[in-house]
Amino acid sequence: MKILVTGFDPFGGETTNPAIEAVKRLPDKIAGANIVKLEIPTVFNRCAEVVRTAILAEQPDVVLSIGQAGGRAALTPELVAINLSDGRIPDNAGYQPVDQPIQPAGATAYFTQLPVKAMVRAIRAAGLPSRISTTAGTYVCNHIMYQVQYLRAIEFPTLRAGFMHIPFLPSQVTDKPNTPSLSLADDVRGISAAIAAIVAEEV
Ligand code: PCA
Image: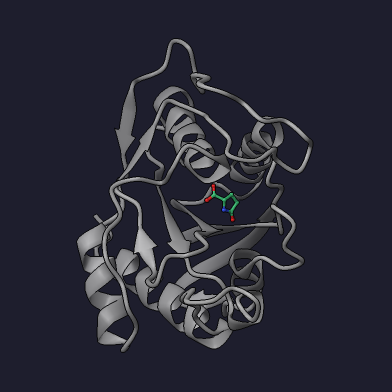
């Protein structure tokens, strides 16, 4: 089994993104599955092409994308991606969509194929906070989750795909009062536990 794990680069004025930092530190094998790591840009009109190129090159069974959700206190596997982009801030290319469909002819929403409840259980069993999220927002993270599902619908029917948001790192909240954070080591442990749950549920 091969799992492509993607992580976004820093955005929104931050100098780091826990997503790519944690993805880079994952082991090359988790629960027997081969892990392929990919950095993707926080750019609406670019990130999906980068992932598609990697899917074509690597032929993964699963794509798990990781992004930062500043302010969240837990690792949160996302249940659903919606066909809408609405940026609170511009992306790293300066583009800020307002009320834009991602795919004008696409489905309103897609559910993930990943076992989100089992992922939450596995992360909690590793001693870390986790819950299912029912919204990935309307920024680049929802966009990539939706676009990978759309690619699955039109081009890669056997692919299973999903998304998980993770909190800020402690170094990102030194000047942000009452804002939760999680260490990089815990991010790596939590993502690894979630991946082990995905491998265990292989159909
Ligand atoms: N988080 C953003 C985009 C990139 C990232 O890591 C989001 O939640 O949409």
